Image (cartoon, rainbow, N blue to C red; front, side, top):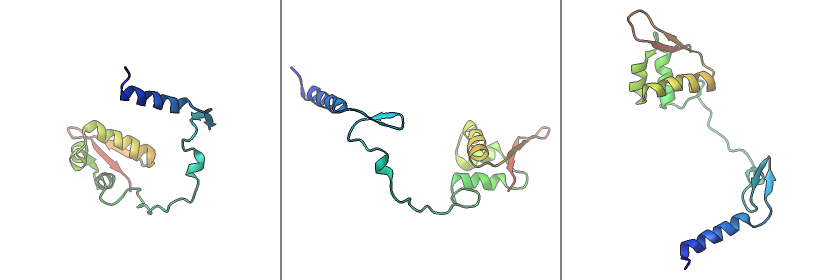
Length: 121
């Protein structure tokens, strides 16, 4: 004896396969789903970003402030400022700052010292 869940599943399955699929830029979508035409319209105005590309008070801004100091910042200082783990800080330095923002992050290590990271600003 089918229960209410079985009936709901059958109805949902029937809705998914009804009507011919539409092709939008190489993707198949069902009739009734929003497509490209739903996204047309005026672009909303965005707030201007700071010159360094980060909002004031954000973790990105904090990291950039530390990296722009004379002598840069150590991994431990960056971890403390952000609350991130070491691998997350290093990934952020490489990905967000190096690749996305196009900044050059330099890494230096003097004898018997901790590695320090810096950015020219």
